Image 1 (cartoon, rainbow, N blue to C red):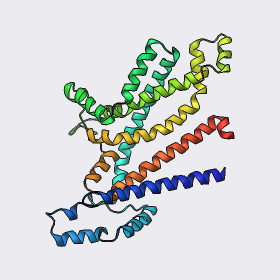
Image 2: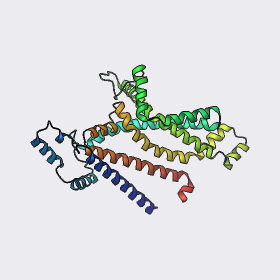
Image 3: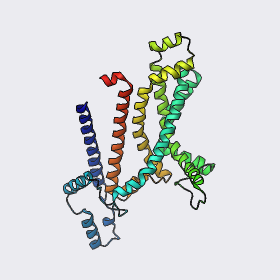
Amino acid sequence: MAKVLARRLSIAAALVLAVVTAAFLLVEALPGGPGALPEDPRVPPAQAERLRAAWGLDRPLGERYVRFLLSALGGDWGPSLAQHRPAAEVIAGALPWTLLLSGTALLIELAGGLALGLAAARRPGGAFDRASSVGTLALRAVPGFWLALLLLSAFALRWPLAPAGGVSTPGLDGGPFARLADLAAHLALPALAIGLPAAAGAARFVRAALLEIAGEPFLAAARARGLTPRRVLFGHALRAATAPLVQLLGFSLGGVLSGSLAVEVVFAWPGMGRVVFDALAARDYPVLVAGAALSAVAVIAASALAELAHAALDPRVRDA
């Protein structure tokens, strides 16, 4: 077990290093290079040189990469070239908003996907099953930013049922419950834009998992004992499909995090997606690389936890 854990940790560390290296090199390859301010023609040449020297941009690429990597290993991602404060502080300020949005979208995915998948699996080939298969396939194929723009246009502009963006209403005067309700109203549309396509994919997965075990002998024995189809589905089939569903939960986190970038930009949500977008426009490579590394760590950790949970629930995987 210790060898397996050590091997997984080494693979995870290598993946994070590869992501950080790729992000660093891609930012270097952008037109203008990291730190757009020194290349701005409005900045005097002498001041631009001082800025480049202060940020370490006058050093060779290899030296900058090694210095950056050694600092990152110590938890120092360097100063933000655009916001003039530590990059870790910029990411830390945006992370809670991304976790709130991603967590809400994940709840929508699980609740919607489980309900639709169960309803479709109860009568395979029926009218609801066929309609949900077409609907979930179409919804899964919709790009997240397009769905975000559609929801914004429909429910914030045409029918103003929800705020158009941000996390709070300016000048709101009220107690904690009023502020919480206001936050929920601002959260609704971006969470739906991320959660609905993910729920469509989860529904297809749940349906396939339930139909795959529909012919198992233990389900036939349960029917032979006179159990109702509803009890067979919820009490036996769903319990047997729990292990792959738990694994789906871990893998869904990566999709939710990747889908939040465009949605956060559309709805002006102050999370990591918006921070990374602004850093990309400013060639702020410390913030870009720190955001990429944190996303990679989150996805790898979620995948590892999903595999461990799968092994805990399924003795065959644990024994293997």
